[in-house]
Image 1: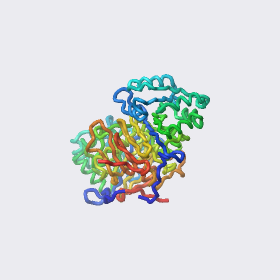
Image 2: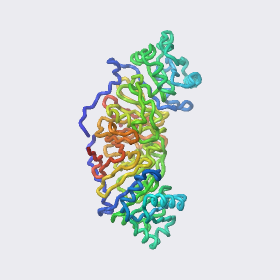
Image 3: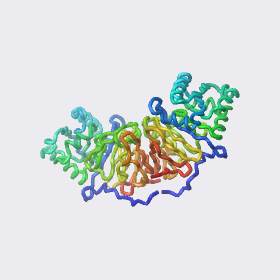
Image 4: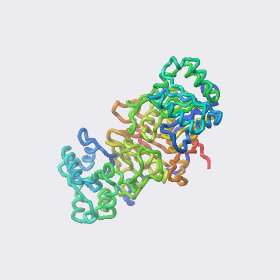
Length: 283
Length: 283
């Protein structure tokens, strides 16, 4: 199976220092009406009854409407301290009064929409840098759909769904960098996105592909273990054993070949060690 | 990576005897207007200018219309000897006059439609048995969509597209048995079917999953090597290294977990050895 050295994922070791926060990375369309397993877990990780949650609607086209929706859902789950941050420009993201308010919260929730709105608005602002510090000191950072994609160093911003892998159709951009050495994709099975995540791996097999289904999330713990919750599954694509790909020789119309990708499909309760790059199997 | 013995695929060794025919297994929606790479290859494998092709429309809801369409396409590609077999009952499939006619052809092409119409009509009839003998002695057997699914011992007849793997949503049935130890799925990327093919692997990791995209085909050669042609790609899922699955413990609503599946995505020109269970990489 090849003899490349296993690379240690640096999640839990952001900016050279030990991280204490959890990430909750949601594949979109999480249940907001029935058991609300994922949103309840966000509250629990943010401190339960003492949680103070910031909802960041930067990705949304209709931030007020989206924000009020989440506010009402989180309230119905027993949370009182919810603060909406409808930040849609870099001036607000550099406003120390706003950032100080954010800094008081114990959890941050990024709504869905367009991931470029998040990174384009928050990247390298006071708020963006504060976010990393908050995660570092133990604040839970959650995001759904576009809010999930932005978690990694490099993020997918476009690519075909329900298609064979075609490198020319994939677009990527720098993300927020909370999750290291991985690329997240969302609405994964529901939009047939394995082709585009395989294309990312072909670009650099060192990246771990994490494809998260709707109403499903991974919790990334500080110790570098990922736990799956929700009703569908998470697909892990590991390229460390890849033996061949034709990524550098393709014409724009050609489909990709890539061999020897390790795939894991993980459903609720399953865990995966990002440090060891393998599922944690318990009886 | 586990230490299970590699199992030798018995393709090319059907019914204990050496097979001489090729299979052309098409993922549906093959090009019928432009370069027609796949249909041209069917003609070439059936003998080129001396080919005599039988088009079996048993799967189709509108057999006459489907048959005439393929007849006109094959004719436009220079083939004169095309015989339509619109067989829709077991009496015809046991009619020795009809079967004798079929037996004169050098290639068989199964159209798409419903795979159960093919197996329900032809299974264990004179025609069904003659088909196996023809393949055995060197006749090319091609099939698209439903005509692709029927090739294997066990075939998929239903299951969710664009969904996480759920074992309860998968249905299978016995196929024609030309391809051993494998299960074929078609319209693969286009309908987001990796979840259902992973579910098949979870049932029995010994099965090789072959997911074929639209306008894409695998040619299975007598020596047990598969070649990819067409515009998209073929996904191979190999379960021989699977370390864990929860298939036997699932409630009907739960999504599946399965770990350590080997995945290869292969595009035009790529080859894969069914006997060795690995891609054939050439420079």
